[in-house]
Image 1 (tube, protein in one colour):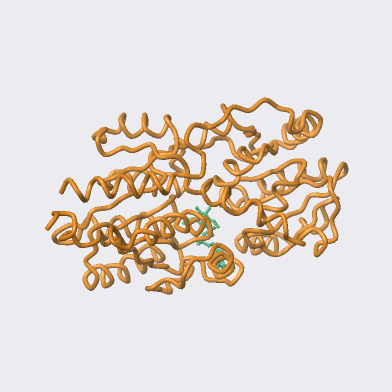
Image 2 (cartoon, protein in one colour):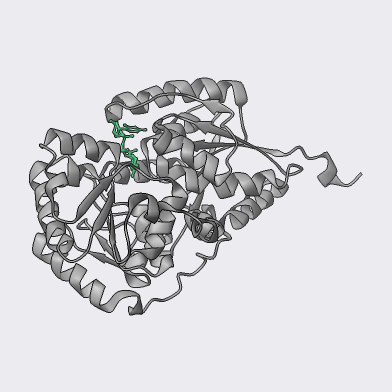
Length: 376
Ligand code: UD1
């Protein structure tokens, strides 16, 4: 009998916890489940995000099956949330003993589950999808999550050459690093046509041209002075065209705490968080995207929509060198000038294709796992 026929499928436990994780696990689950002879993939949802609008809608739209395991941890301080995820995940790993734990991105769920797996006895191997990104800013919780997760990972899947370089500089064995592209872009490419059917513009009663804003980084929204500077910059743009602002729960909470001034900013239209297809529909049609999210810098670059990042740094420099992204921080004058310029130059700004961001990253990741398995 050929040797391959005797081999059992590789058991993979994928982890997702917060909104940006769901579009990253979707193509991986699809790819692994397409090949049941090779892989048995199960999904753990930590429950870091739990609202219908922050979690369930993405499962429905992206066609992700209900997670096999739900930890239901909810919100809390970094320490409390991370600790609850770790306690819950340890029990899961004792029971399941997968061959690999696969974590994505840089949220608290990512680092918590990587840490538990690496400290099991015997250890369970960790694969990190979207490894090696560095903003160089350790005040950002995600930067700590990225560094720790990468230090614990046995397989590191990267999206860009700068990520490979960071990992090599941190002493990661090059044989563990695989540049595969971007799974978030896999999802974008798969769903962008479907998103054309969204009626979100009609529902929100907005006509192009409009700008699209997301803002949720603690460094921007938890600090009253910074938040205020950004709102001042936005007000100057809002006199030119409406700015649609699906507000993250953290931001909505801070706006209430600071006296809801955002509602009074000229041109700013605060709406509830949106699902994936509605947001993609808006992003594709926006004259300008303003954001402090990581994934949106990437999506806007692929869609060819000018993007202003309301941060001083980015862990995704390829979106600046190749894409449509520009860092503007929180200075109102700079935000205004950059926005006016982007509106003038628009999508005509020159872009270069980003290598491997072609919708096939999950396929490459599955191929790496398949090779690992057959050589073990
Ligand atoms: C988390 C990630 C961040 C990611 C973001 C995307 C970490 C450290 N941060 O930030 O990297 O960019 O998700 O959304 O992991 N809340 C709700 N409903 C929810 C979830 C959260 O109301 O479903 C509120 C709670 O008040 C909570 C606050 O939002 O305290 C923040 O949630 P949390 O998961 O701590 O961090 P995010 O800011 O969402």
